[in-house]
Image (cartoon, rainbow, N blue to C red):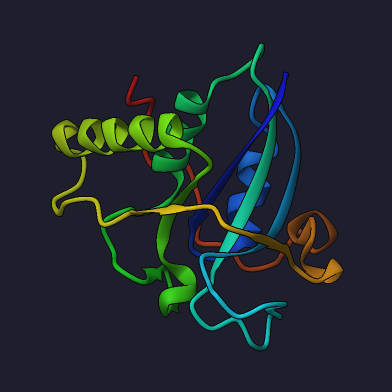
Length: 161
């Protein structure tokens, strides 16, 4: 069955580029989640985080495996920042769709904190997914279209699992 996960962890270009290549991922879209005003744009998205909506085949990967990869490709200990990108748009967040996803995310954050891989505790927020707004078309697949484009995402660690 195809399911969806929505994660934010800095600029959505780099997240999308790495996540799209994971086993079981069938599609990705970048956009905005976590704000309240309707119809955010790249130029105006107060309260929103740059996010990636991940469609995945749950017979080939799991939400937990996606969480594992997410926590390996960004720094979840820096509030409102990834690399040179600063502001709440670049916060680390998991937008959960139901209580099961919320519990899995809570448990995974505990696992990451217990791992001792980061000197500071995880600041990733858990926020209910109320609405995901797809970003402008020029942001979709950005690093495929612009291979030399900016990213601060890379695989930092092996699996937490």
